[in-house]
Image (tube, rainbow, N blue to C red; front, side, top):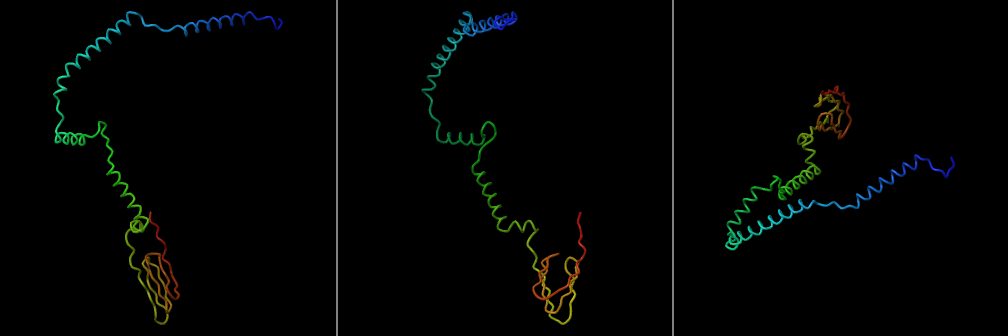
Length: 184
């Protein structure tokens, strides 16, 4: 077969493709039409609804003319009732509550930053440190709060701030530490 000759299968497929494209184009160009009977029924319903709405407007007209606005007391009562009922979904934005909550959070943060947090975290105010001073001759042995023993030389002063927290103010000392206890 030469390159100018066409395969019969290709020409048949092309013809089917062309026919499908033409059929789709005809369908796309045709505008859908409502049957005349259905169109007539829809127009009749629209006319009936329009006539009913116009007649109800004329019936309501005298009541509207004699309507008096509510008194200020009634308006205030209505506002109060609406405020108590709240919105339909049950949610209500309360700016005062939001501001109070934000202020409380800011106050807690500032308190924490300026040292109140340390007191809360550590379990309360620190106890006054216990001072040990040895001015005599020789050594002096003392028992510390955590069970450790300290041997103070003459002229030594220490402050015990709590268990495992000593401050050497002056002099020299020797400590025999108690075994650490692990809490599980």
